[in-house]
Image (cartoon, rainbow over all chains, first blue to last red; front, side, top):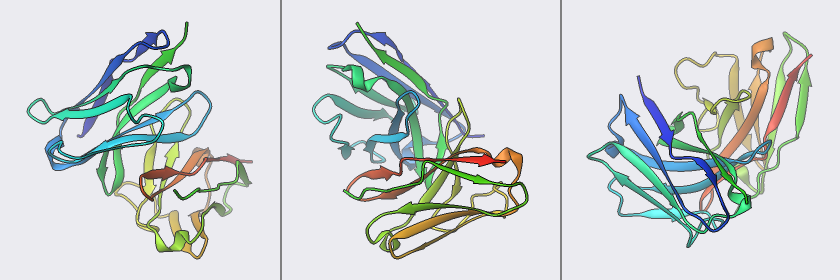
Length: 116
Length: 105
């Protein structure tokens, strides 16, 4: 069974940083492009970033350009999202998602709250 | 990038057919995927590539896509289908619709 487990969320103040992790089991992550998607409380899904299979190509939504960095460690079967200069509007549940046929596997999400 | 417009809510009686629209300029030229999300849970893929179903998804779920509108079709609606539904395409990045809350009356 494929499992994606996010961690690293929490409460931070504006301007601070967080690194989210997404650990995979039951699947070899290096076979897939991987994505981060977020969802603010009571709001819809918003795509954040993606990374190709070997980590050499990344793409970001405008909201995270210059502040977020997606990366992966295929040896550890883990995806990351480094988030710097966090803002109140970054408050959301962050999901990692596998791109198979569309986003066919999602983690359970990790909550990030940015507040003073 | 493309903007995808969904109705905020759709209501349907049990046993009837629900149709959830996803509008976007020339969306018919793109591949559309649909996700179901229950409260407090992660999204689940229910239709991919406009009209295909992942394994484990009931045949009651189907889709169509033409012109400026893609549609998720849920036949013989059950109480357990009540959830939020999101359409998604790739257009210079991943784009999601705003989501539709399906209420089963």
